[in-house]
Image (cartoon, rainbow, N blue to C red; front, side, top):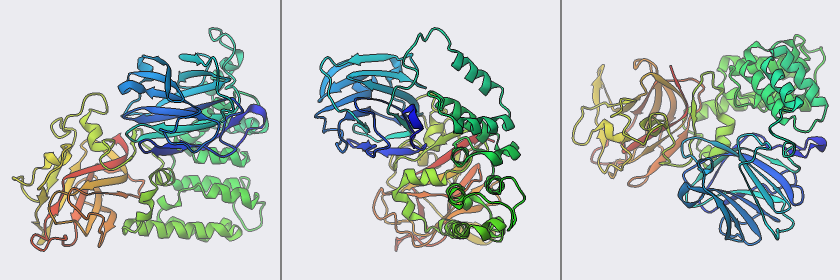
Length: 533
């Protein structure tokens, strides 16, 4: 969406994973530079080069570099920033800020104008850390691509500017009145004043106000439970920004209730009172995560005045009910092929402060178990059970082929399984992971099979906080994902509840005719929002 004359082109906060040697271009008219001038801001997490490609036309991959500038963060084995033109090295800079982190997202910005490239870290400002000028610049540079070298890179929260950031000129050593005013405003916000501020900012166009809008939106998202009647006067664009903020920490029921009140201009919902434009209401309703609400609340919504006056709300709620049941019953596998879309749509609103660990690909070393093995990203990896960061148990005693510690040992196990155990008169087979003092809102999990033919076919993923009461998070029946030796399987999980313990419970025979009762497992990993309980 273009913000009038400021030149700001906004890309809704999102995440994408770029495979090796590929380039994700932002090719449409709303996502490109002004001619030979513009900037890009992005966050990246990866194990190798993160490359920004600048060209006159989109569509090339990482190796198609004719007529292209490449700005490579973490080049030369993550040692420097490197500038290339047409594949030839033009300049580099060795400094710690140029390194790409495999454990956390780092925010960079880049501004290009008539052959000069400015680069910095964090929010765009006049305090750039590096610049380079091409004495004979390429012409017609309009398109931006985010690329990777020989491993996957994850990008998120990227924004394109078609004009100068609004902070590239002036004496950076002298605080500007605008900066001081913005800082004072954000530091003294109340919920009511924040709503009024967004109403004003939505009506005026002032260059450089993007960061202020983001700060106020974040403040409202974090304090959503305290929102009052002033929210009812926000324009649709600002409501969408708050509802989609990654800082939103309210229950989905509260989010819906607040949006419902907004739709009726703050009045008690009824069949006769004034209602906003249906197009605006539908736009906001599509952003609410109904699939995290309980069925009773969803049934109440179906009978509400808003549902009777906005017919699409009924279909949206019914779709959410169906999705909940299909995901728990293991029928949501169509989402697996679109991981970043899944993460955006089904990411729970975290009401706990924690680290979000996002799935990139099978065996990516970016999940909870690996994270705990690095002491929350602070040290080189060590088996997390050795560090007493988590505990793994099996239904059968520890033995030659049942070694819980090795399930998170970062290596392939040719023979590893749990056997049935008699519990309360029933034989059950399971593997269990206890995160100790931590809790996880699980959004996805992955398992790897060993070298046997006992491919798992029927099981449940369960969560618990006491080890006694277990909740089915996802049920698998006749699941043939695991088909060969060492195969990985990965599945999305739909929940906004946090648990400290997770269990794979076998519910049917595996594919082996010889040992159908074993639960074979070489590795396991979880993803989601990890916090201390």
